[in-house]
Length: 243
Image 1 (cartoon, rainbow, N blue to C red):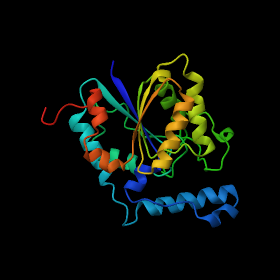
Image 2: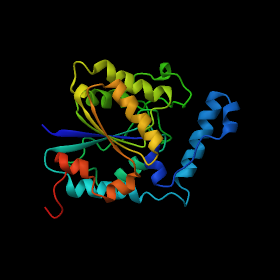
Image 3: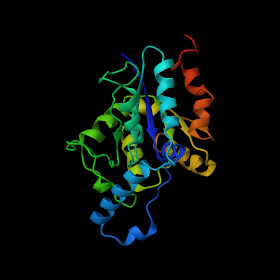
Image 4: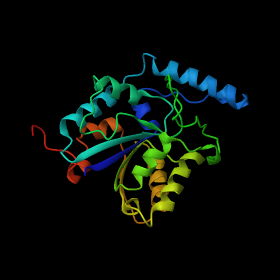
């Protein structure tokens, strides 16, 4: 049975790719449904702007494909609305091939996505930052990765703040399973160039999972990737170059 490395991506990955769009303050005056439509339109447009360069994502996928050690697989989960990562995964993997280093070719969106597909019946509902956790409904897209997460011990959180209520609810849900499941003794590597944001994330993870280990990297995801993801290499996730 393979060991999973769970990647939890927040806005830090999108920012690293040049996607810095934020909900405009004037949107706060809109009715919720109108606001959701406007957000989806603008995020899709921002994804295709000239400023967006997904080289960091392509570099990550190439690194994982080339260096992931036998017996390890990667699971991608995001709280982002954009689908830059999903688009690059589908571009990187041709002819529907399921590579041995990926748990699933789907990137699981916990807070919904602006992606448009012919069948969105299993997708997570679109959640706004100000939404209460009560708006998080049971969906296959959110339930499947959660059920995988509680069985795992190795996590990477990129650009995650756990600031909004819906994201904090994820930690609360993991907390409720910690006494009986492997996640209670998990190890987390959190990556963020903002020391204050990183420290807050570390504190929130540690509070939710008191027995876990948290390792902090105060740098951009791109710089950490360029360094060879040393903490993960030490864990045995990756083979040495040329092997």
